[in-house]
Length: 224
Length: 255
Image 1 (cartoon, chains in turn cyan, blue):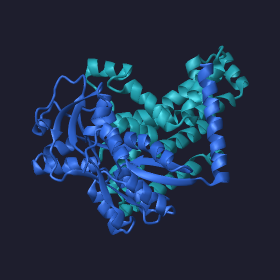
Image 2 (cartoon, rainbow over the protein chains, first blue to last red):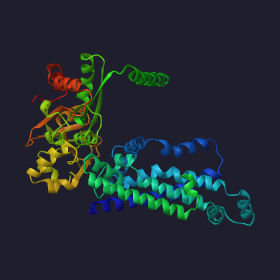
Image 3 (cartoon, each protein chain N blue to C red):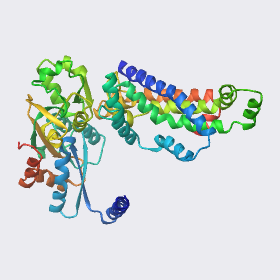
Image 4 (cartoon, chains in turn yellow, cyan):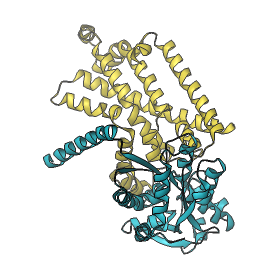
């Protein structure tokens, strides 16, 4: 049953990278939306939250059309760099990033909005630049909420299936994550493999949730 | 836009009322699990069967034959099973999932190698796939997809599996392999001749690949069917001239 460790390692790698990207994207955009007032802000917020509510197959299709070798981004990458994204683990990272992005973005926005504006004003009066203000006041105060969002997004990325299958396929050792390996084993009637993979997946998810509870006491549990 | 939306609303309403009516009227329902390659032909055949047997509603369930077998083995309420190969039906028979006495072959297909229509390179022989120009090749997953099993058999017999196997992009059914080729995401793919016929503007048939075992589609009533009579009628219907004509229209041969 060594076969399960390959998809497990791949799943952790994909979810790890997706969470890493979401740390910057989610926090950056969450901060921008929390601080800037501009017309159409609600619309932008809704559009950015869309991946959370849309079926993964719809997202997968959008991504396929966009980064596929005939899509605008995919064709450009192929022409200029010879890169084909579809059926690579990097495509799985893109899918997982898009799907789990709203969890970080929403958490970050909410966390920044709960930061007392008076504290930020006081820091400004004391002469802090906007950058310093962000890193020394806003971010430390919002950190716990952001961490909760990051852990949820990691958990979501671990379980991503639909969009990943559509853009990354199911190549053992390359793009076959745990959830896809389970699907394949069940389709082929390999119940022993499926049982083992399911057990590994369940233990991994429990471990993530437990460590989430440790890191962010009271937060993740109430949100989940 | 408004027309489209109102059409959608009307459809949704029709679906809802149909669902209610079914609960009330108990129309006889027949669930047919069929190999993905049969999708278009069976969608054409189902209304003809319904017309010939008033009061029946045929539900079609398409997937790779291996996936369908697993559904039936796990107790899915299926009445008729049509597989794309004998191996899968043999497995069903060994597990006593089908009525073996009523099993019969009803269609013939061929394995073809297809390339994207805009592809500059067209393989002249299966051995050409070992070249670096063919980096990604769509093949059905041999464990559950018959077309993948046929393909693996051909490549193994030709001593090419070790070289071509690592280039394989596994497809969960034959239509997924076809889609990969049509979108140009792979350099070539193995599908059935009938699948290639569906997308003449997107894929080009490079070769017809002879298989060691003929590609014969068997059909059988499922043993646990609640509508045994109707299931048998559907199996008989597939062997009758009108259904044969439809299958021929979609490119299937006669057994």
